[in-house]
Image (cartoon, rainbow, N blue to C red; front, side, top):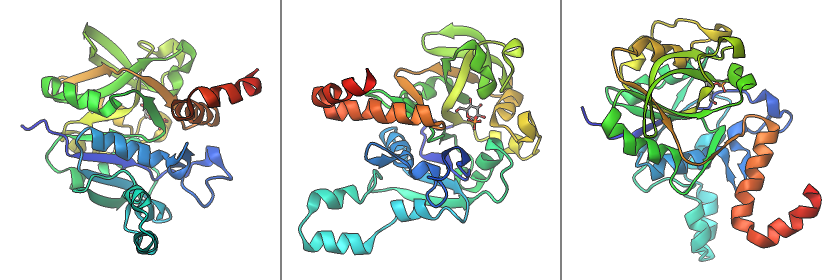
Length: 288
Ligand code: G1P
């Protein structure tokens, strides 16, 4: 089977209630980190990893994604008439020239596993990537590109992992780790959102996955797990022994933009890269 990852799925149907009122009319994934919405950072990371098919699992109320990634004739024509080539480039919103965009709807909020299952027609019989745009990773080589480079050797299911504080395991899918080889961690089992006393380790999944196509059959059983939701973690756990299952210790700093502090931290961290020493100097009195 080819291990080339062409398709990436973005589960973005959620309501983003933690960011109300900002997310009443604007989807959470459209909130900007510096000058790009979260979803565009995710799309650019996938494009840098070689993906060309971008699948948005969304809801009918969230038309903003198609507006953002689709053609904008009013903008395009005005910018063309004014000869603003740099700004015209920005209208591409991070998509490669050969990009294929697919929108599919998740009608009920039945969980992350269900959202991924909603993309089954687009993913077909090939392995595919999943990015949760809430999780941002800052590194010169994007997290997904680091993973696709490993995938030829592993195949199966591959998840990005990092150690989290022991009292935070209830927020993540957590690994029961086996042998470690370089950045790869063999996975013997997986538990979704365990209480610290039940967690098999502190090695947690962050929002990057490369999944074998077999996952769709497993998900189609609609088994409910933690929180009464259909969990991708449970479906991957079920496939252990059938397809290879590995964790990947990525390089870079990860920001949890699903909560306000993490989102602000990401904005500061990414701003400082662009703003450099001058911005740092202006921020220092605020931080002190
Ligand atoms: C989801 C997954 C979880 C994973 C996390 C990463 O949880 O279910 O396994 O560790 O993303 O951010 P959620 O954040 O949607 O509750």
